[in-house]
Length: 116
Image 1 (cartoon, rainbow, N blue to C red):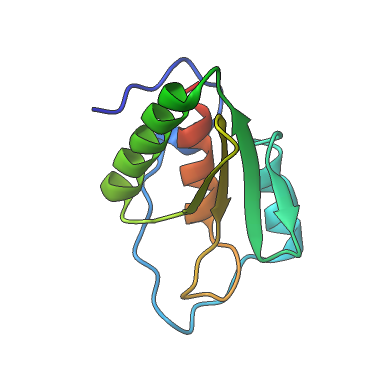
Image 2 (spheres, rainbow, N blue to C red; image 1 turned 90 degrees about the vertical axis):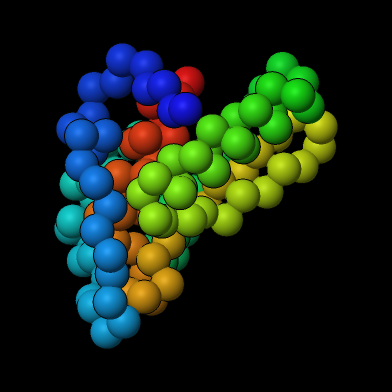
């Protein structure tokens, strides 16, 4: 069960929509506007967004990964997740169907941030 904490972004109210091959990725201006709602994420080459989360211990990091997995399943949009060290989780989001970023990536990032 996913529990969101109080969060200011309107993105958490939205739902990811299915993307079709051939859809265009977001333009730079739209990426810049959406990024303001997820300020702790970095844009990588205009094709993905990423954030690293540090937890108290391995067990807390794994619990976070499982919460992210629940969001991914609910949204039908799956990030790349890397657990490294003993307490760090790196999340990367992109939309393969567009070959870059879609609003789905920002929606999911906002929902992940709201877990904290």
